[in-house]
Each structure stands twice: as C-alpha cells, then as structure tokens.
Length: 363
Image (cartoon, rainbow, N blue to C red; front, side):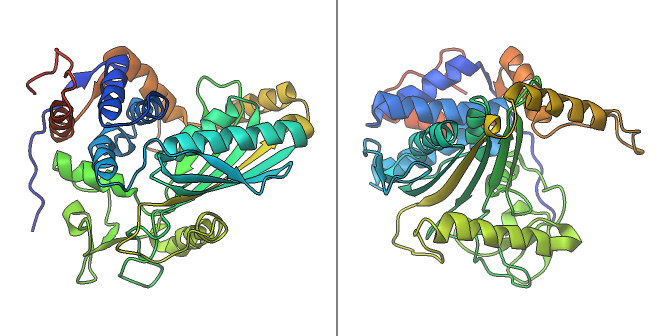
C-alpha cells in the first residue's frame, strides 16, 4: 500500500530560544542544571546541523525515561581502572550526553599528555549524535574515533542474510582538526539509515530514499511504517549490493562498544537503555606539528575539490561540509521543527509548567 503523503506544518524556532526551552523542560523534570544544559545543547546542535533525527524530537522520550527511572538524571559519573592512556567511565544510568562529553574530554587530555587516549563508557542512556563528540575533540587538536552500540536495548538491524533484528544502528565517527570553515567530521550509522530518520519520515509523511527496510514478510521497502517501534521489520546494514561491508563494520562496532565495554549484546526486555561507547583520541603534534597538519588537510580538500565533476554533480564536498552550511543557514533563519514534534514538546512543557516560547505557543 502506498504511503500516505500529507502536508506537515513546520514551526520555526531560534536556536537560543529552542535551547533554553529544552533545558528548562529537563530542569523542571528533575535534571540538574549542568546535565540539562548538556542535553539541550546537544539536541539543538543536531537540529542546527540538519540531523533532525537526533534533535529535539528525542526530548519527550528522554523525559519519559526519566519519569520511569530508566534515566537517573543526577547520577554521578565515575572513572575506574584509569591509566595514563586508558580509562573506564561508568555513568550509573545517567544522561549519555554528559557522560560522553566527560569521556571525550578525558581521552583528549590523555592524548595531549601521552599521545593517545582511549576510554570506554558503560551504563549510560542514549548519547545522541556521535559527530558532536568528534568535533569536540577536533577543536582541541586531536584526531578522534568514536563508536557506539545499544547494548541490551531493543535491536533494529538485521545481519547479512537475515530478516530479524540482531544489531543496533551501531554508528561510528571520526573527527579531524583542520583550518576549514566547519568541523571535518565523518559521522555515520552502519545501518542503511539511522532509525531516527525513519521516525522523521513517518512524522513528515515521506518515503525513505531507497528500499532499506526488510519487512516482516522478507520484502524490501521504502515505507518507514514497515519498521515497527517494537518488532516487525528490520533495517539493512548500509552498502546496497555490497551490504557485507556495512555488516562487517557493524560487527566491529559491536566488539568495541558492546563487548569491550562489557555491556553485552542481544536484547534484555527488562533492561535499561544502555549505550556502550568507545572513544579514542590521537594527538596530532606527537606525529608532526599541528599547524603543518591542518594546512595539509586544507590543501588535500582543495585538491579534491579541483577534481573534474561527474555528470549530475555541482561540487565536491568534504565530510561535514553539508552540516556546516546547514548550521550557518539555520543560525540565521531558525530551525524548522515538524508539528508533531513541536506538539509533543509543548505537551511535556505544559505538564511541567514550563513556559512555551510566546511566538510559538498554540502550535
């Protein structure tokens, strides 16, 4: 059956206004100001760069997990088994944004002190968009590598040759210091699309760009409704007719972020949402002067951009350039939010007696 297409209202909100609104909701729900600011900054930054699937649409779900005790918003972040170059961060079921910020900064500090730093993170809630952390590290002069796994939380991706859910979307991200206009970051799911993008497509009445869901009957489809929230249907690993490549990377992400962290694999229906993560940082200046490296990064990008263009293409972009351009536009013009997401935010805000921004109250 063809997907029903419908016009979706898109309220537009200023970046600072939206960040304040989200932060106040989390504080009202019992989150300390620091972690609440981490959540709001991270979610709004995802919208700002165009990754609405990891933006403020997630906030009502996080609030629900706080209310049910599956996220402990004031949990302490503890560090165990620390050496000069490694550490284990235990978030004690707290907010993944604060825990992974801490782990990224810890790995970065170790890299500056000793050349490399590697940190695992366990018992944290959803940590959001990995590119945020890679950019955070790159701004401090280190190359970073971040991977994440959903632990024992519900799975959504089928392994190569299967049609049932056995893997998470298992994203990975690299960040590189540069002199470019925006962060040089590769941030990607090892699934054909991120699960959040299927939710956005549902909310906007859109089809997915290509068939990347295995429906319950084994057929391939672009219809996001074929991927149920709890069961039924599964995402494919990325790769198209080379899907073994996406599957292989997904497998290895599971090793770093699921097995090395000790959070496990499979699905525990009674368990907490539990993102495991591995963060590694490498100090550029331990290999060559940072200024020389960043100058060569720009020269390399310029060299690629000077490539003769294939038919149907206007330019060649570096990883992260689309996001940098989107952020510049949205800072100036505001962030568009689909009406279902805005309604959920407003409903949560009113439940906690948080003032809705006047320009958008009533949407």
